[in-house]
Image 1 (cartoon, rainbow, N blue to C red):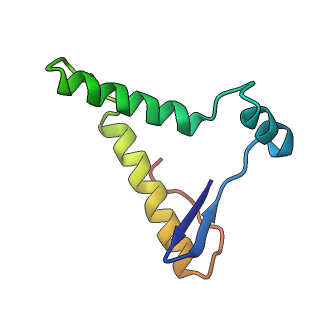
Image 2: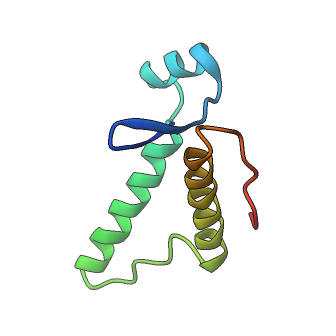
Image 3: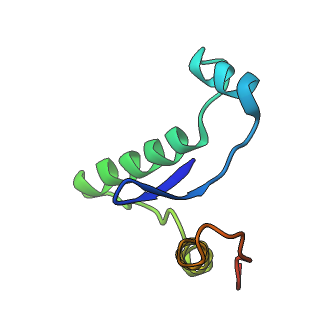
Length: 88
């Protein structure tokens, strides 16, 4: 996963290496980003149908995301230096 701002790389996370990427591409395992998107679309469909969309995240999840975003910004400001994710 890469985080970019105006085309400039500001963060990257790699998991599993080449073997994992091939397995995802072949459909042998699911990409976690696809699973998250599918859950969001299912919740949207339930809400549109008048049902309960059920929460996908809580306040703790939101705080963890904002801590990661803040770390990415601090890293970018420091020229790409590694920074700690505070409060996660």
